[in-house]
Amino acid sequence: MNKNVNTNRSFSITRMYCDLFGHHYEVSKKVTQHVNEYTCKCCKKQLTTNSNGNLTILTPKYREINNLLEEMYSKRLLRLKEKTFSTQIC
Ligand SMILES: [Zn+2]
Image 1: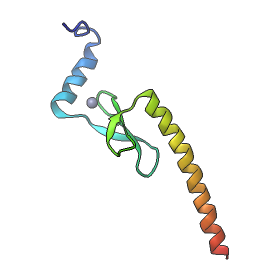
Image 2: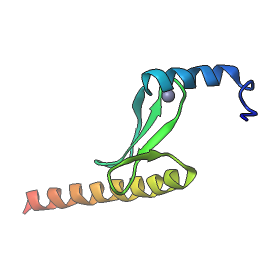
Image 3: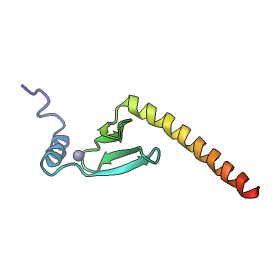
Image 4: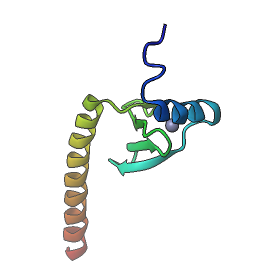
């Protein structure tokens, strides 16, 4: 049934470990205040926070969205900093 069962053996062992004990996700990238990217330390599976605030598999499409989000977020932070700076002067 499963043709891939004997290929890439070490990968299937780490996957089995994750299946048994759960993934060891750690934040691999902070996108915004609410959106992070997570990578499993064992099998390198990647997750991200989606627009509903739930965790979902990090697909190339989500990675693209996160890059845009990160760009927008850093620009907004910069603007906020400039704003507070100017109000402090006044
Ligand atoms: Zn894992």
